[in-house]
Image 1 (cartoon, one colour):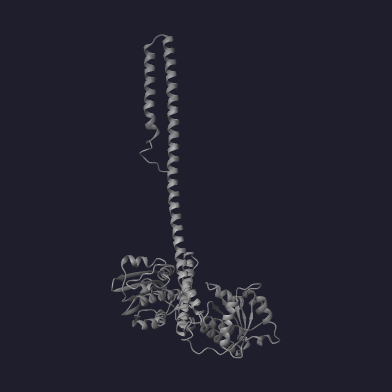
Image 2: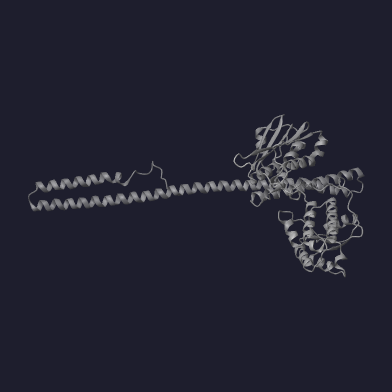
Length: 517
């Protein structure tokens, strides 16, 4: 413990030296007195006086030393208490700051959730008005659909941010073609750019590796955030994505992949650019309409870049545009087989953009869903595709109906299984059906959409996975994939049954993968 030098004596010797000098002087005086005194009585008297004086000085010295020791102990404890109090005050300040940040965080989430809910509830009430015109009905439905999509994106972003902050976001490195990934992102956003008359540019120099190891999904999520922001804020001009590669001099297979997203938008001031990486900050210049969005995209992108060992940097100039530079350390792949490469998975198409829906005429589908509203919705979707639907409201009822037919393999052509139901959940129901030898395709339909939930469903025995909320186009596409692979599996050799089943699962899974950005 360091004690303040202005309050602490240099040493005990420096304090006791004067007292020792006095005692020594008194002893010398006593000896001189002895030499000049010839009588025994005088010697004894002087010796007694000297002893008494020395005893007094010794007692006084002991008292001084004791007082000094006590003072030092008190001072040491006082300094320790002051430091302890300072630490407690700092912790109290941090606690208050954290509590304030959490309060603001909850307040922002509440605001962001209530805003789309207001539109959804309000326009839903409007649709109940029998006097509303057809055009107004269509606008109300479009508004509800748009705000539902926004609400879903907000929930996904909040979950991503919470998972990253909790240190539970894992990485999956797979062989990825950087040029293909960047091109897929631009193609996904091309329609929005065309509406605004923007030119989309992709620059891929010759030194870019054809294949590198990346977490494809996370890199795609970052690029979607950056490019969609560029398209949103740029009124006219262009949006460009440029790829770059910096090879390691000592290990040529290692290097940094650089992705630069530039635009000709309005740009930002330095303070705005810094705050843009804070959660729930929606930067918009001269156009309040562009404040739409969760305000979490850049924050999540920066955290994901750091999670991958990289960084996300930004520069911006007023009325000249902005540039965001993503740098990720990676490794060049060996010549990977085409089946090993990860290709982009686009979000499900809307009904108007999808190809012709798959015809389920003559197919019987068992729907296991405990929510009557969702059961009615999925029943409606399947019926529109021509399927005959039977509904079970818990896992026990599902098992009983699925195993109740004489020819169980044809009693139902497919089972759509909610994974969280009363009495018996979908995981246990699926395991029981598989243990009993049922070969019917089982599709997991669940609101569990976190990392690992898909794998858990497949381990239970499901053949495909679809996360809620669902689109009719996505459901139709998945069923077409499942039934197509079922036909292939039935015609394959019995020895290859296990391998075909795995291929079925993987292809059906890829057909429904939707990236949240």
